[in-house]
Length: 90
Image (cartoon, rainbow, N blue to C red; front, side, top):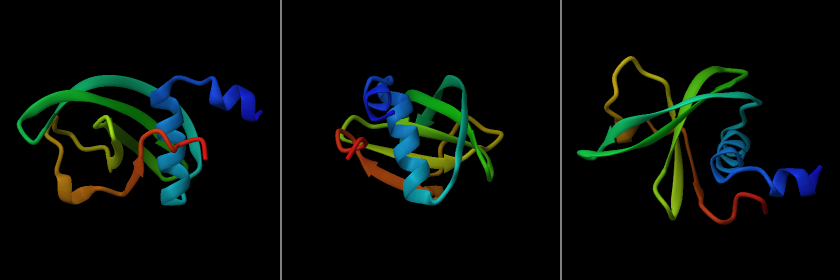
């Protein structure tokens, strides 16, 4: 299982790491869409946990997990979990 997880796409590894950090059970990845974060359009990756829908943004050196909202603008104060990118398989 560890080898299969290590071979997963970066976004999925980061989502799994964020779920673990937040104490959520990952269910499935659902979609990706551009979101506004600090005035910049970046990709948001949507997924479902045992606690409902969430999304992740990958900032390169770190990834952040947020609750899903109706808007496309990310509220930085709503962050649920953060992981350092590159360490998600440790």
